[in-house]
Length: 97
Ligand SMILES: C[C@H](O)[C@H](O)[C@H]1CNC2=NC(N)=NC(=O)C2=N1
View 1 (cartoon, rainbow, N blue to C red):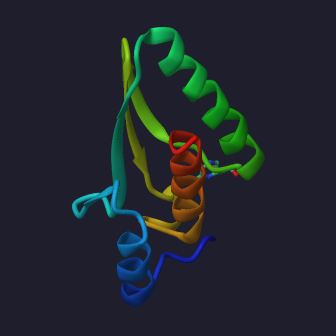
View 2: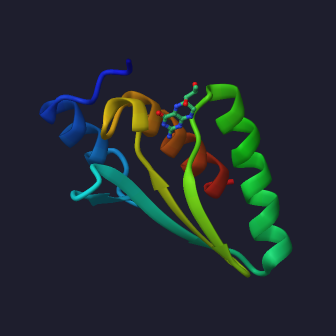
């Protein structure tokens, strides 16, 4: 069982992730990223997939051509956990390159 984030930790984590929105209904964070074309979007998804597999923590996402809609939450915790924050930070690092 993975522990959900406390109210305080959640607020602090969201503060540190300005590019992410909080989906309150799911207690998830979401971010949409847009690339030049499908190949770039899919290359990004491949990189994230390898990180996710290493973390054993996987995004819910949808790709439409050059766009990737990402939702992170922890099914085992019924909401946000530290793993979502860690994966969001890894995604932000890729997007910041
Ligand atoms: C068995 C396996 O470790 C679990 O199902 C992992 C896999 N990836 C996961 N990813 C996410 N986002 N939440 C989880 O609770 C989760 N659990």
